[in-house]
Length: 212
Image 1 (tube, rainbow, N blue to C red):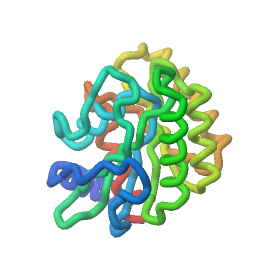
Image 2 (cartoon, one colour; image 1 turned 45 degrees about the vertical axis):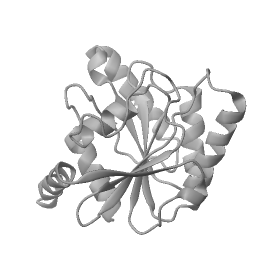
Image 3 (cartoon, helix red, strand yellow; image 1 turned 90 degrees about the horizontal axis):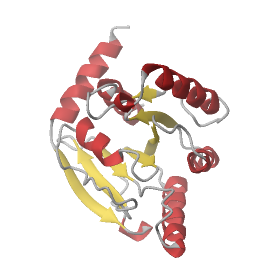
């Protein structure tokens, strides 16, 4: 039991230290060398991915935020720690009805190829908006991760925007769905970028995934 507080403190220090944007990769040929563990963030457009990344890393603009769905069109890599300990990978948002079909197809291939072929990918974080719960497109991504044998946490975002009873219902529904998926990690994390809810737990889960 003593290891958990120690891990949480290590995670706090890690995310309070150097974190830098490395590069964007529009295709696999632009990926950085696979030298350190990677943790990737996936989620529907406007799920709050950029805001969560910024809050998680105690930065205001590490990941750009935008009200325009589908702004993140590439794999964005961020280096964490000095010396380098891991990379965070911001994946293109999915489920954007406004985007051209060929662009959606290209993004889907990029994500699928990255998930299946990246040996240093330790864990995915599938972000789900607490106000809406799981959508069919979320289940598609969960199935993609299942088939790629990539372990993932479901992370509920914007929990501060939902009444307690509604949040409880979304948590129960999401947990029930996660139990049906072989690659879904049993730990689901409820977060709010605005209030800081769940951020310490998420940092700890990321460090644990990267170091095991």
